[in-house]
Image (cartoon, rainbow over all chains, first blue to last red; front, side, top):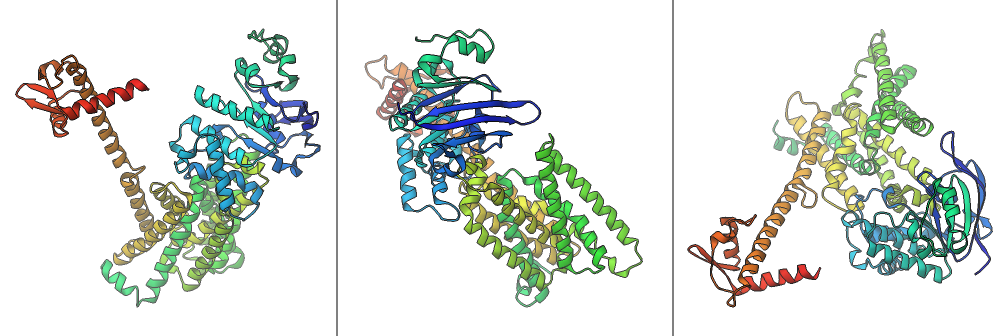
Amino acid sequence: MNEKLAIQVDDLTVAYNYKPVLWDIDLEVPEGVLMAIVGPNGAGKSTLIKSILGIIKPIAGSVSIFGKPYEKQRKLVAYVPQKGSVDWDFPTTAADVVLMGTYGSLGWIKRPGQKEKKAALEALEKVGMLSFKNRQISQLSGGQQQRIFLARALVQDASIYFMDEPFQGVDATTEIAIINILKELRKAGKTLVVVHHDLQTVPEYFDWVTFLNVKKIATGPVKDIFNDDNLTKTYGINYKVAVNK
Amino acid sequence: MSITDYFTLLWHDYTLRTITMGTAVLGAICGMLGSFAVLRKQSLLGDAISHAALPGIAIAFLITGAKDTHILMLGALVAGLIGTFWIRGITSKTHLKSDTALGLILSLFFGFGMLLLTYIQKQPNANQAGLDKYLFGQAATLVESDVFLMIGVTGVCLVILLLFWKEFKIMLFDMDYTKTLGFNVRFIDTLITFFIVLAIVLGLQTVGVVLMSAMLLAPAAAARQWTNSLGVMVIVAAIIGALAGVFGTAISASQDNLSTGPVIVLVAAVFVLFSFIFSPGRGILFREIRFRKNRNDLQLKKTLQFMFGIAKTHENISHPHAIRILNNFHGFSKSSLQKMEEKNWIQLKRNEWSLTKEGYEEAKNLYNQQSNE
């Protein structure tokens, strides 16, 4: 495995009110891993991603992407927000939402042209949604909406992908389709950070894992650290799951 | 004066033309910007801003002592922007939700404005009369320079919309994602809010503080029913707004004692009602029709499938069966049998039915489709 660090987080602390949501997080993610962030509700999983991406302003700490501050490396990073974070009744089509993935590289004012539209259609094809390109987004199922969000991030052609619960509320077929795309991205050398809820599938889907509960409990290869000890520390109760050791 | 007289007079009468132009342009800009307010789920922001503008008008009058429309508007603009700023401040700095913040600022500013208005009216100054027209608006006071100002602002607003179209669109849909792409969302947000405040202030003279938010919301709500594209929605909202302005003015000018502002708002409301009921995609009427049709179709198909199950047990599929064996089947009725005969799926003879070849094929395909899934 490449030892270059894709993401480095130092002393990150975030608070909304009085209680910290994240406390003194140090995190190093090597390039080319498919990493799950696991932890109970309110552990700060989404907050961690959002503060790395600058959506939430941390109280303290720093983030660097491939050794440089995040602000200078935006184009290397793509984000897949939680599906529920937007209003799907917004008047637009599936292809249009995917096209939004090209807006970052276009910059201010410039409109997407043929090249961008072609890229959007290719991304739709990759997620198996090409035939839905002109569909109004409210008429898509939850799984299809999730695929549209994934396609929008694929268009960005980034090196690092942050995904907030991409498997939430999708059926088994979509889950398999999505995880196959994620594994393909890893094969292509991309780094993926995924907020994940289903502990059962962690060993099967991911090769790297971070346990989080306000503080970072552990981070490393799934085969080394995905064990009862860390699960208990993270979830506070004696959490037994079947782990293939 | 009848409405037809109005439209003939429109070409000759300077005042009437000015007022009509004014209300049409106002309707258009409000419809355009209202689309953004509605999609941002900030429908009530318009209401708060227009009420918040009232003390600005009063203070501008107290300072200058003159009733110059443009100076009063400037006062309204400043007060409206301060109100907006405070609403933002309250929601981001406290635990209060935005509806509470809006309500708070709305009533606080409006109350203060009313207080100042009463104070002004008690002043021994002959000039003060008529300031209260800003409460409900008075289109008749529109003069050419007001209309030119509206056209100017609308033009600038159009240019800004076209320039930053992509940025407005993505921010309206997904604010967090827009941030990660490196766009300054605060700038985009401030820009759009500034124009919303500007449009409201422009409309105060015509429609008034109390009804202004309807000008913003009604055309947008109506337009949303007809399209699933943001661009089309903004254009349709502008057209509906302009039409409401023109027809509202026409109706109010052709009757005695009907003030223009409320009539424009009522015309806009008629557009909303019509759109809610008759729009093909989202309207109540067609949705209900589609729902019923779907239900009836399914009922027929289900009955056919049931018949197919019976007919299959015989070697000859057209073997007649007694109608009464269907009696226990839910969804069966005389009219559904007739519809099936019209579709040529079955033949009816006295108290017996038999499947036709078409009916048999139809049912077989139905059966296959469902067992394959």
